[in-house]
Length: 235
Image (cartoon, one colour):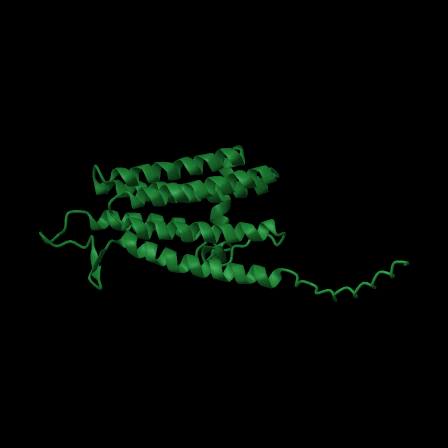
């Protein structure tokens, strides 16, 4: 996770952010963050039938959903309410949040559908590798280019960029909303999803390699000696 490297620097700001929420239950914060991501996914879908200016609230909702996703774990740890049940709920809602947001963008008309779906598969596989390490007793694995905080921040930033690109241009008839690369028309969401595919698969590879190296090597036992032939039966 790239953003994990800066956790120490944002510690004082995180302390001030967490303080007002310490009376909330971590599960309530998990559900609140999930609800914000669902709202972002729904608004992304509605841009197909209304206005792309909705990408501004989409950017805000994704950013807020990511903030509450960070907040629930911090509150659980600081109030001594961390539990296996809460961790399980957090993981389930995280995966559903990823699915809703990416599917909403895939259906918005502002991204290539099959590319968005490939990106979603990469995100889910990267998350699976992290939790699989935990299931094998190796602890939760966060290594890689595409942690959840990274992708939510990128989704929020790109939604805001898309909002800026669809504003009325300063020069009539000139638009930056789409880019042509090798004859293919791409939006900024398409470029982000290409990154998600590549970075997601690299994250899967690095996590799988780390898990494989941490697992104990199988012990090869020598083959059992051949059994003695049965005694001849009496005539």
